[in-house]
Length: 163
Image (cartoon, rainbow, N blue to C red; front, side, top):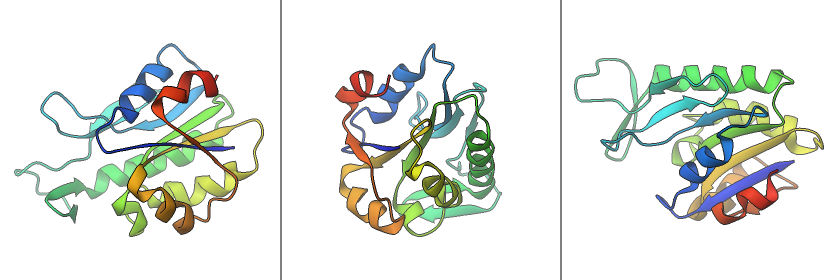
């Protein structure tokens, strides 16, 4: 089953997922919260590791640019590998992909992970994919990834729906 957690930008979707994940051993995948200075990073849920994906002015590594933002190409490569490996493991009932956005709709960012995972979870009754998609991009993402059966969720519905 595919669940789509949706809502406006900066409405607390990632924070709600982080709270929902705490203390659970049946969830894996990636969260993309902001740190105290507003810089985004990836958090590997099951491993507890984090790594930056937003480039700083001093970063000389290859980047992807979207509007005023620069993202580290290597961070997305690592994130896509992590998602692919996490999907192979049978230890998690839920796999989180935070988030599908403008980059992914241009076949960049977490696109490779999404492209591989969505068909795997489309008809599953035992494992679930939780996609985070801002409300203004939901229809475009559903069409882009040909997502069939799914359920839309708001952050307030997480606890009573995904348990």
